[in-house]
Image (cartoon, rainbow, N blue to C red; front, side):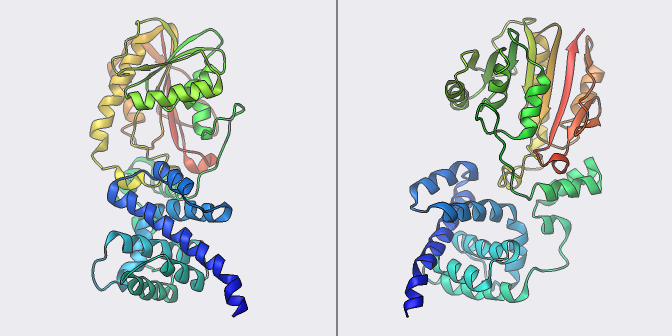
Length: 385
């Protein structure tokens, strides 16, 4: 009896961690919340600390990444459809068993303890079956890797089978946290893009899709003056907040359409078009994005990328340099944009692409997520003759 009392607080904390993870997953599934936005607030409102907060983060991000794979393990033992909270609990439990390797008594017991009402019996029975059976075999690659079919098919077609599968496996790993010298947390691939822009002290730079301001503040850190354009006032406010926090008066946030910027043509030494894209190269940091992006997204994004590029090129002084970047891997948003420019645009030429860890990709360069443990990224640099 004494030992049971001593173990009770840990068990209660374990159930509380699972309960919070389930609640966040329900908000993502039912309410369309973004994991990176809803989770920090949920953690701040909880009384969890240390290891329990880290466990919630792992369960939310990991379960979201592996949603399709854990569903494949759970579904054979369901006799009828279940509601969203019950499905979230089953996913959390199966993720612990099959991915984290949590001992069954802990994974099943704490997850069942996080569930109320009749669903407890369902969760308990199904998770015990999953614990006994282990991971299912014979899964197709999209299910095993836990991506929509179209994402796997698109990247295999665009990158080749081996590079695509390696990229998808890499993006199932938790992201690394990297911090700049000024304290700003930013993926290395994005830091490298800001460096490639080559902004120098006193130069005038336009960033036509600037929020949340990571690249804009990095370029301003060189001593350049940066006009940071973003279409949405709320996102431009993020640029302003980061500018103030880093003490960078040379960043000027502007709320405007980057495809029609209220800026004088032919005045800017450097232009960055870090274009809105499908984001299929940043899925390790945005685990829920794989389930949000539709296969028709490129029909909307590619025309926008082209408009932003044309607007950016119009801003350059003679000899000025435009850097186009996207954190994706699709041909349509990378070499497809390059091919369109090469055919339809005179008066500009491409600069030599960066070397390793980048690989040549059209006239630009591609960084695969498995190469350096970063987001994927494509860059293309053009100069006005």
